[in-house]
Amino acid sequence: MEVVIERACGMDIHKDNITACILTSKGKEVQTFSTKTVHLLQLIDWIKQHECSHVAMESTGVFWKPIVNLLEAEGIEFLVVNAQHMKALPGRKTDVKDSEWIAKLLRHGLLRASFIPNRNQRELRELVRYRRSIIEERSRQHNRIQKVLEGANIKLGSVVSDIMGLSSRDMLRAIADGEDDPEKLASFARRTLKRKKEELELALQGYVNPHQRLMIKTILTHIDFLSEQVELLDQEVAARIESFHEDVERLDSIPGIATRMAEQILAEIGTDIKKQFPSAAYFCSWAGLVPGHNESAGKKKSAKTTNGNKYLKSALVEAAHSVAASKNYFGAMYRRTAARKGKKRAAINVAHAMLRIAYYLLTRKEMYVDLGEDYFDRQKQQSIVKYAVRRLECLGYSVTIASNS
Image (cartoon, rainbow, N blue to C red; front, side):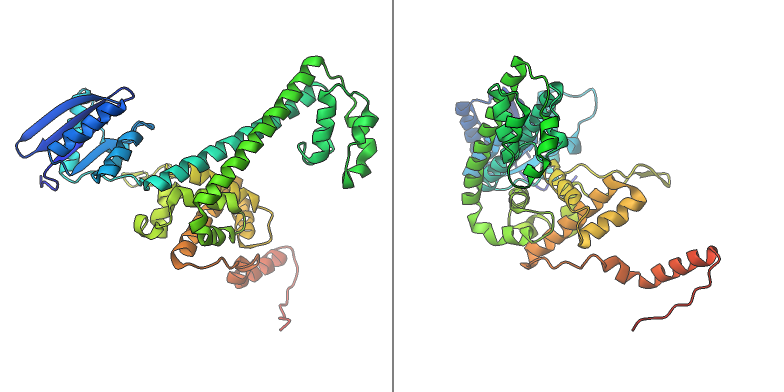
């Protein structure tokens, strides 16, 4: 088999140790290092002493990150590879054999590197992912406080649209402080909620025990803390992404994608999108928003979507659900697909379309222009007319078509 890389290093990475194997035309050399910083520096020196130009490793959890940071600083080429793409034969698995196998695949050019952005981009990605996890935790706390209220037979969620709105929070704080009078609690209603005073009084009449008051107070404090952390991360992300504000605005112009989601997309894919993803199809495949290929002996099996970037995929599916009732191109696409294939497939379909459009907006430096809610009707006007006429004729009507124009 043709040798592509003269000196290649394969690494089998674990939490506490790393087994590295350097392969050359003269043979191999294997060493094991600890994952402590001082030993990682020794590993880098060892690689440099052998004049090794390329290093490959599995994308094992987060354990590859410290090594990649050091390799990047030293200017050594590295490949972080999906472990599923380079499995060794069963029954021949040891740390030494794994590292040697990775080195062999690398030396013969048989590995496909995962997309690893630069250091600044990775830091931005970590911040944005952490912010999303905090927002999700805050949502869980909202659900938890609703559960506590239901346990106390407080039906506030049946009257107000947002249980964590200003009026609702004032009522919850009063309940936590020991207030039981439904009239006094309902007096915290603001603006249009005042019109529902009688409903509020009925909904706020319950039986709240001391432990439930404590839970409500604790959850509210936790939610306030999480909101402060989200605001802090918002400021840091905004400062780091300031140089890409035009790209954020381009993505923000897509219905369903707000500023935070635009920041998340850029954090996941970077700004040099054309270099990493040569086409929109490749980009969508990387995100896991394309059907899988599973065919054998002429039989097509499950075509469920491929594994991809779960953060990007979940964000876009969320955006797709948010436009389900919108009067625009995406809303029409969602409803059209949902009628035939269900809401889940409709969300994937719209998410895929959003990502393709995002790719073209970023590569062509353009803003989004909506095609309109009636786009599909315009595209298939004759088909729609024929279908309607055929249905009426089946019901016994005689139909004559006349154009208004």
